[in-house]
Length: 105
Figure 1: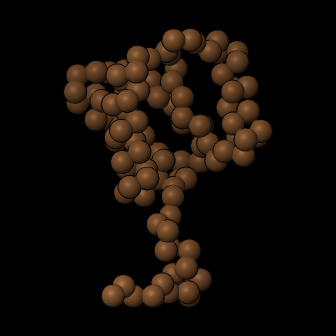
Figure 2: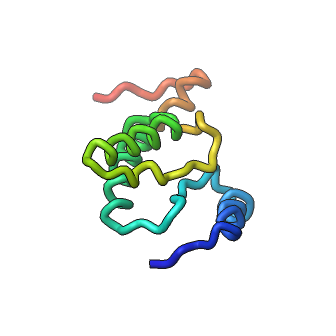
Figure 3: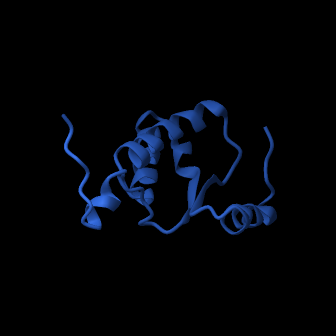
């Protein structure tokens, strides 16, 4: 494992958001073990990708899920993104523009 010194943390965020055109970054305030990261990520991605929850809600619920398992380290995750950032279902863009997708079958 490696740790990013606090003075370099914002440079890392800038590299992803500015340099790589990411919409945001999720990080931790301390170094974490893989088991915690996996636990948090599984819950986060289920909510953010599968359920289309805004990033703030997906992170909040992932933090709480880790906490309910007796581990307060879920609280160390921090979001560098607009709180309402979310994904749209694949057909949402077409429906919003009036281009309904063809019915199945």
